[in-house]
Image 1 (cartoon, rainbow, N blue to C red):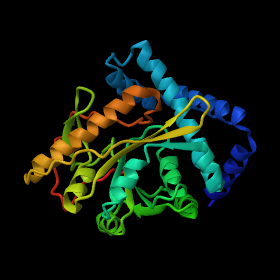
Image 2: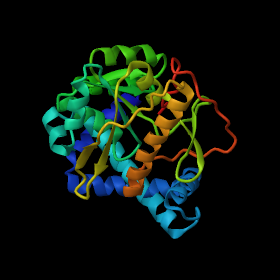
Image 3: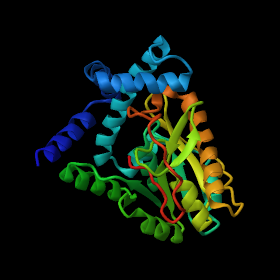
Length: 303
């Protein structure tokens, strides 16, 4: 397929460019896409307006959306670059903070759920976990272009990441946790019809039940982690203390309360770096009335 050689060519071009050129060019490409994609631009205005508490057409919402498009294309540049990065290069790009929380979680011997958002660079976050010696399994959806999907999976496995396809993922998630490994779920976006109704930035939204449901079923902790891009385009991976998982015996209540605690984490980190929250799909959909799924069939993030 032509996409595979194009991906490899892109990797070569991005790797050839020094960072002082690579990221300004990526940001410029993102700004161009911003003006060429009116539908995504309008959705971005609405999303960032909701986050910032301003109307969608407020200059602050528009400026944040424009910067987010630039950051998105910086993320794409790093995504393509990761195909050929060595573990040492990834360690130089990502500085971890708070890894003692992961050590504490894995000391329990049951593994842990790592919950994160589509902020900064979630793929680089999983890669950094692997090269710093933590067994990580990312639950991912397959890319539509099969050749590219195989290439990306190979590049991820090369640096030690485990990959769990979204379809039929529950059994493999439980197996990974039984091996005392980490399972990463980006859970701030859900497009299915089985999720949890929550208040997200003061507006009703539906988010995945997966992290809470799996934690309840297996007894593992939920570790909030996120990766933020610094002005020099290097990253800091911030690991926080485990969230409290509600365990009252009322499954629906426990999933609801635990998911709301995850949402509070998302709100806090997105408010801190709103233009690094790279979501250009509708988050708030008034036409959907989902019900919470049973814990044995958790709704997972499809992104």
